[in-house]
Image (tube, rainbow, N blue to C red; front, side, top):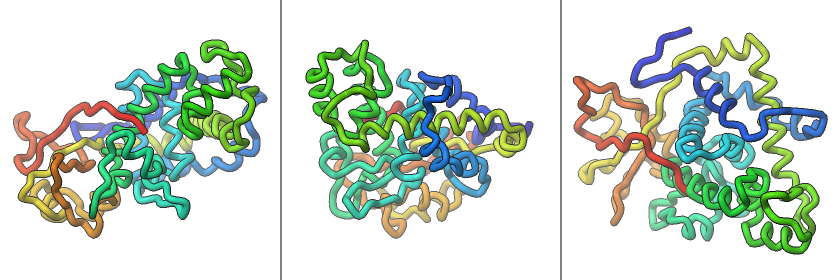
Length: 291
């Protein structure tokens, strides 16, 4: 197993954290064959060494586990955007978590001229995890109800529970009335994808592909005097093009400072005598937020 350092960790460790955090780790005959086939390429995405997918997946898994949430929620960006921070839908949603503008603003994601926080994996993940934390508590810790609420809105799920005479702690999500087929399918998608990744863990060649150092991602605050990704990258000895792919919120690499500190997702710094690089302020152990 390749050795990790302070800037990397082994890909198998990310996968282990995901598996250990699943609320529904068993996969039986109820798993959707349709959605299992649809997501069959997901393990390959994680095994591809030249992509950011596994590093981003690890970042989201970490945030969820820090918030004591099931790691099924780490599959939402697979379903929504294919784990592509720059993803945009013609219908309006954008970013890793495919938020609409109203939802983003409701959960403190900054959207202003030249800055759409939905395209920031930092802003959107913080918001998404905070929202999922709220939904998880609202629906008695049932990840299926919380996921349906993420898709359709909490009030639709609360209304469906009321109409059916069910309560969250004893709910039968598949039987909730008055919800769209898309919302019901959302749970089947997430569970099928979890099972696809679980099954991949039984294949030795796939596990060997994960057995590699994966960059740790951390949140850094950009000093006010730096207005280009390239300038920050040069000061911190990082790959500017990779940072731009991780942070598409900075259009053309330009960093526009506003009333709140600007943060970006970067590769973990290699401390020198325990001191981080002076050009950036590191926000270690950032907990996630809501959708």
